[in-house]
Image 1 (cartoon, helix red, strand yellow):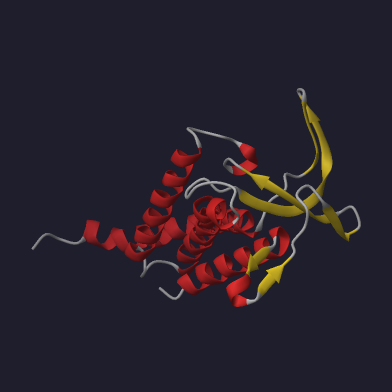
Image 2 (tube, helix red, strand yellow; image 1 turned 90 degrees about the horizontal axis):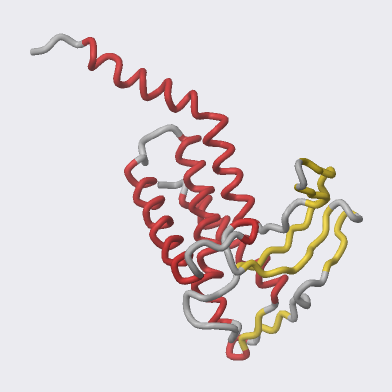
Length: 193
């Protein structure tokens, strides 16, 4: 279960960067990070890469399904399911476990926003927070059947982590299947006792 260190690192990096963007004030601990104004943008690599502070009340790309509480509850259940599955697969291929660790890190990172940020920032109740997004990347122009996109959707480290986890899974899925077939093949051809 050492891959959970990857998950913990992703969650920590995600939350630290979100606090730097949104700001955080905890007088008892002497913490006072001013953050950025909502909607503001700071160039990092010219217009190619910017830090743009937005908040997402829904799922990825702002999609809203079933209301905020349902989405947060679904995220809790999905994260617990991934953690349980990761435990069951603890002896499987490292790339497979790593992909699950990335996905879990991203899910938990955004889950923290949804569960606690409403209360932490005085903007809503528990389970009614908004996800902080800030990575703003220029994208080649797409104009297809009325759909136009000239910049990629603004995202965060948690979103990138889920994407990386899914990509690892897609890239290595054949090796996962080969290992599974290699393990199950001898038992199918073994003579019955």
